Image 1: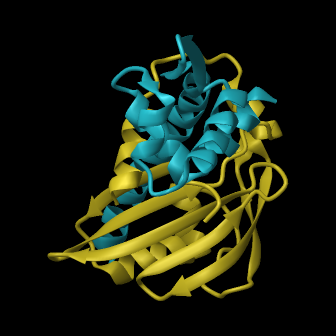
Image 2: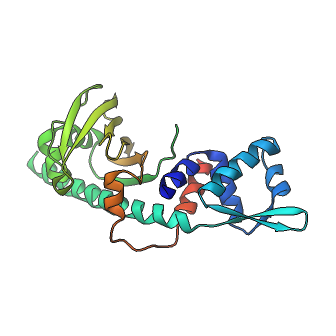
Image 3: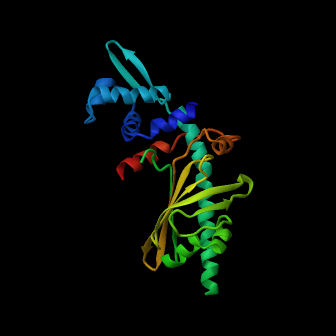
Length: 106
Length: 134
């Protein structure tokens, strides 16, 4: 369930941008929202999706809420993709061999 | 597009686009570098790719631009992904770009692929930056 949420969370460009911005460290909700052309409520909704996917977590500091990147769920996606990437690299290398052989026959 | 392209690879071949295209769309050649199946450059054409241990996977051709682009759905219901091959002339050769997108990690093959693998630091964020920049 959690992994599926991660994929849904990553499917939106605003949410991907939020994650990229949070790489540098926690950012206060207000500052985070200011960077986008969207209104603050729309950004809050995106943050909620990211929180549900456990990609970000919220921390209260006085009256401000800070958002932290939590990359743990991404590692699941990453290892999974890495397997396919290796698979495709092998296939593309095999294609080179076949093309070279074909050229030799021509 | 509802999902980001999750795998993007490219490779240069010292062969003309026509030859690379042939290898992508001719079953006899296709079987030698990837999988056996009745692949054909015709939109709407359905074919099966014999993926060995992963079984026979259904595909349907979604887009064809001769010697430029071939796109098909791959393993609907199991992986539910789309594969796009883009051919770009480069000097006397061809740069072939592969886009494999639309992964569902909850799918049976996704679960299988996850089994037995360790966890690594996510380089995916770097990839996301590239996707955002493009």
